[in-house]
Length: 207
Image 1 (tube, rainbow, N blue to C red):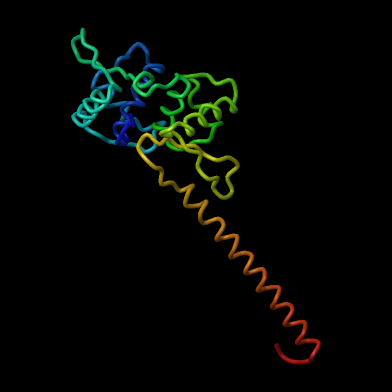
Image 2 (tube, rainbow, N blue to C red):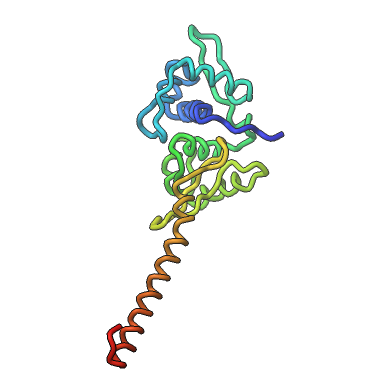
């Protein structure tokens, strides 16, 4: 059964729950207030959001219908926990990578290794790339390696949980061959101009 694309806020809520499970375990599962604060956090977020608690709670209900979030009762306030790994059928390492991609946007494998350290420790960058390639090779891909942007040393990865990625990297990759073609044409024109000038000089005429 194919999954539906998540909305940006659904992805943010889900990723915040995964993140906070590891970074503030004493406060997890999260209250509505803590979850909203995590969604609107100004650091380690791209894009930065400013959403009201009511909207966050409505999004939680949608995620509950997808079996990705559960409500935990038994305390004075309702709390929420994720069911990402089981709901998506993913190992913990893949969950960590997708979580950081949902929180911070496209990143290189090296950046992901660093940013996921508190969620999952990868032995090296190649192990990060291995999990990313597995996510990209799924029948319904969850990650994609973006074309390397001009001047970039490494390609970035993005998640596909919210649908296809329209990225700056992709636009830049399309533009790069055109830029190279223009540069070649300019070089040819300059070479022809030099040839014309030389012939004109030999003939003693003004080019």
